[in-house]
Image (cartoon, rainbow, N blue to C red; front, side, top):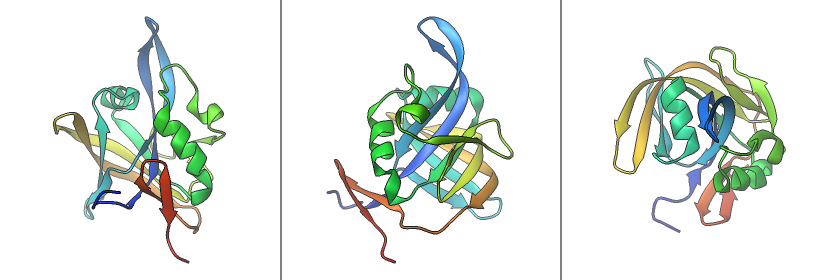
Length: 163
């Protein structure tokens, strides 16, 4: 466990055109991350950091939108699956058993059963070495329910918040 753990685990969803096996296709994808943060209250801005080689990074770079889905502890297995597998050749929604819903303000899926979500429009990308920091304006946010949230401790270890 690093000094910066535990960190809240979220599932970032995205949709866009991607080259898959030499053909352009529209793909929906999910990536598990712990590198995310609010950046501003007015306007409401949020940031996520993704590895440059990740399939989701390519989709978000092209589409300029993503949704941050805050998840309960019951989605731990889905978070592990989405963090270990590339969406380039699989449908992570179906493989991880997650319900797909449409966002309100952006052309992007969100996760049904999430505690809440942020619908984000990218305003800037910052090269930070092997990662890209996507800085986004929040177009819409919604909290659906209260529950224990999932926090990553490192490796395959997770914890949650107290009631």
